Image 1 (tube, rainbow, N blue to C red):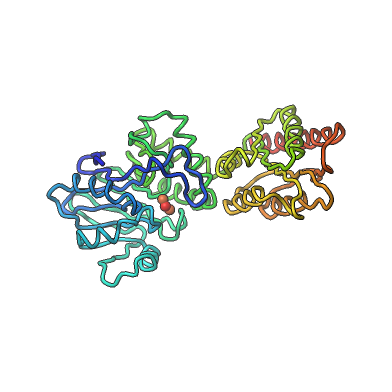
Image 2: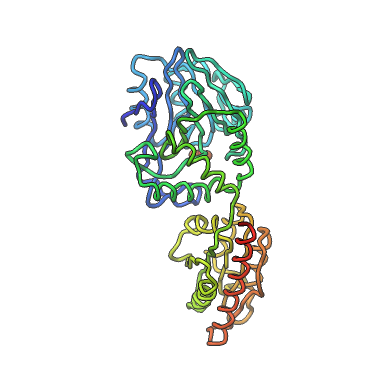
Length: 403
Ligand code: FEO
C-alpha cells in the first residue's frame, strides 16, 4: 500500500479492506471499509492508531515508506478496538517506541487486550498537550464515542483533528478525501455508519461537537479512522451532519419492516403503506428477507415512525423480526412513533410481543395492534389502510410541530 502525504510531513498509512462485509452484525456490503492510521514526522515521529491484524502487510508497507530513515518514537492509541489496535503488539516488538500514549480508560483496555508487562504506556488526560517539536498534540477524551477509551487528538499547527471512529464511513476506496467521491454516496455511507455504530452515543456526540466549538478549534482537516478524510469546506459539512444525526430530527417518513410466512403479513404491510402514502408520508417497505437489519436501521434513524410486522410463530415472532427488534433496541433510536401488525393462525401473540418491544424502546405506539387470522380479506385491508392513515396523521403532526 502506498502512503499518502496529506499535509507536510503528515501521512495516511492505512489499509483498504475491499472485501469486509460484517462489523458486529452491521453489514458492510457492498462497500467494504478502510482502517486509517496516520504518521506525523517532526522532532518526534508519531503514529496514530494501527489497523486490523489481517491487514498488517499493507499497513507495514505504507508505514515503512512513510517513515523512510526515521525512527518511530511515539504511538498514540486512540481506541483499543482491534480494527485499530490489531497491529500494536507487532509494532511495539519490532519498532520499540519510546512511549505509547492513551486515555485513562485506554490503559485499562490495552492491558485487558494485550496483557503486556513492560510496554512504555503513558496515560494522557483530556486537555493535556504534548510537544513533538514544531507541533504539539492536544488530547481530547471522547469517552463513549464509541468506547470508554476513545479519544481525539488535535494538532493546532496543522489545524488537523484525528477523530478515531467518529466521522467514519465504511467504504473501501482508492480515493482518500471526501471531495474526490460522489457526495450522495458519501452522505449515505456516513448516515449508515452513524445509524449502526454511533447512534446510541448521540448525547456524547453533541457534547463533543460543543467542546470542539467552545475550545475554538480551527479544523482544516478531519481525519477519521475509517473511510474518507474531510478537508476545507467538507469539515463543516461533516460536523453539521453529525449534529443533525445526533439530534434525531424526524423526517416525514415511515419504515414498515416485517417478515412474513405465507404473505399475509406482507399484504397487511402493503395496505398500511397505502394509508401512509395517501397521508403524504414517505414510506419504505422493507422485508427482512430482502433487507439486512443494518439497512433497515439506516432508514429508521431518520424516520418519524416505524411499523413492525410479524405473523405469530411458536407463540412469538419470526426470528428475523426478533433479531431486528433486538438490534434496533440496542441502537437506542429516539423520538419515534410506532405501530405493530401481523397475521396469526390460532394463538396470535406476535402483535403483543412487538408492541412490548416498541414500548420498551420508548416509542409512542399508535392505534391498536392489528391482527388478522390466516389470510386478510377486504375488511382487513381497510383496517390496515386506516392504521396507515392514523399513523400518517400522527407523523405529520409530529414533524410539523418541530418545524
Ligand atoms: Fe473502528 Fe470501534 O472500531
